[in-house]
Amino acid sequence: MADPEDATNGRVRLIAPDTRPDIKARIESAMKVIDMDGEDYELFSDYFAGYQTLPYVPTSATEETREILKRSTYNLMPLAVSIPAQISFVDGYRRGDVENPVEWQSVWGRCGMASKQTTIYKTSLKYGQAWVGLENLGKKKPEIKLYSTRDTVGMFHDPVNDQHPVYLFTIKSRPLDKNNPGRAVYMDDKQVIQYDYNSEGEEFTIREGETVNHGLGVCPAVRYVCEMDDTGAVRGVIEPLIPMQDAINQTKFNLLVVQQFSSFKVRYAAGLLGEPRIDANGEVLRDDEGNILYQPIAVTPSRFLTTDDPQGKFGTLDETPLDGFIQALEMEIKHFATAGQLPPHSLLGNMSNLSAETLVAAMAQTMRFGHILKTSWGRSHEALLRLVALDLGEKAEDDYEGEVRWRDMSDQAFPGQMDGLGKAAQMLGMPKRFLWSKFPGITHGQLEELDKMHEKEMQEMQDAELNSMTDPLAAAKREYKAPKPPERGGVGTENERSSGAL
Figure 1 (cartoon, helix red, strand yellow):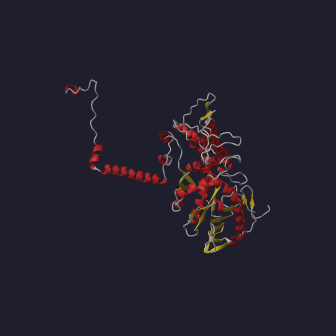
Figure 2 (spheres, helix red, strand yellow; figure 1 turned 90 degrees about the horizontal axis):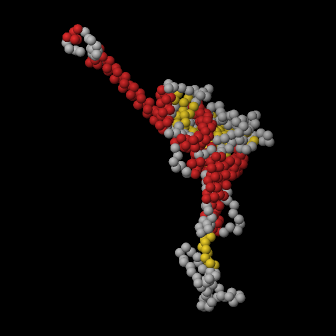
Figure 3 (tube, rainbow, N blue to C red; figure 1 turned 90 degrees about the vertical axis):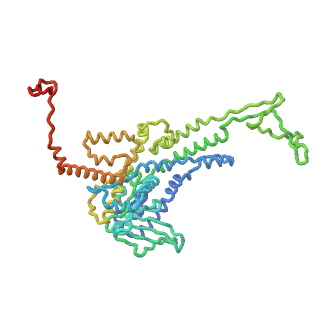
């Protein structure tokens, strides 16, 4: 490779295995990569925000047409990012046999990851990857930090198979002036260094007391990937949808132009003359040949025209039907939904008279896409929480069995889900406590509350049974056996016959 410290190809970040850890050279290389990737990331960000390539118009277009052009953007990119992110939510974590261990309870919640995780997913879908790192290490109070993908570079020996980068560099804030420098962070397998970032010459000065030797053995940063090929190149959902978004905007523009200029009937009148045109002196205006100039006749819906000239003609021009343009727009949106693996009804809004089964079928491809994303993001969550556990002093060096629990965000009908859970308990013998976590929409806090309520009920039942064992009256009732009543319809004994018992 040309540069032993840095190689790029389709946003693949590699460094040579024998590279010496020259931190200054690594930072310079990372800054070059940030500048090089800036154009692509700016394009994705603009399309997400609605600043997109405008449809084609001829140079002779009127001002009114150009004003319509500004309103022709029908931005669907936020839905392409939000829908997969909205069906993804981590609500629990298990390490080995421990449910919700210390790294989950004391760090995940303290760092506000219940809300920040959605930002991670949206960023990954938007740019193809998102970066999360650990800071404040070595004090058993680590902090989970989200980094700007546009200002972060992580270098790998093997980007496909390595979970952690060799090193990561991120710009937290840009400098305002000489007296207000920016902030930057560098981290590798040995240390985390905080820098002041000065704009002049892009100088980075280590902040006093801000170098930490973390001792984790790997770079304390994790990448969340949307899609990655076998070369390590990553891609989000916006990049492949740009041509389809442009097609939707063009079709929307054509529809608006026809709606503005040709969607109504046009009345016309021929052979009629208006009033003569008069100048400021009251004289009748004439053309160069001496012909009188007449005022044009305004033909409006509120004006009724008549003439006694037999040569006069009246009529209307039919409007241009909009059905074809509307159908074309709907077709483009359906193509967008198909390419983005999105439910078409979420983009078109046609949800009338849809059964629960139909909604589930419409969401099926999106849920399958979400499952692939959750597998990738879940692996990154587990790697991050494992590093948190190591910094807290937990024995997690060889523990790779950690597993996050994703909340059920499916659209299945509630009665059907409950029926399935009940059959799983009765017919398959699955533990009821395990099936609690499969209850639609249940949260970690609600599960803990259910556990406490269940333990309280079981304890009350045990206490009631124990009291009944020690209560003399209850014991006498258990020992007393009522006489068995005689059988009816038989001949009976001699005493029963004499007493009239039959």
